[in-house]
Image (cartoon, rainbow, N blue to C red; front, side):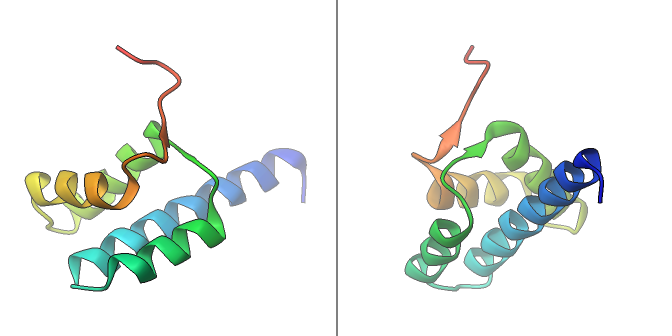
Length: 85
């Protein structure tokens, strides 16, 4: 696998894990379980990764408000914003 393919694969994997964590929280899973999955997978996540995961969940029918609440609950303190406003 080329370097570009590895980066893409890693980005896809990271996206899948973020969506998995958000779906777990949405379905009533415990925050402790979600945090354990997160800690196993990430040190930090980029705001663009979170935004992309949110879009995927919204496309699957999750409301924007609920999606934003899940993100705040699940990832607050771990999100790295390279372009602060």
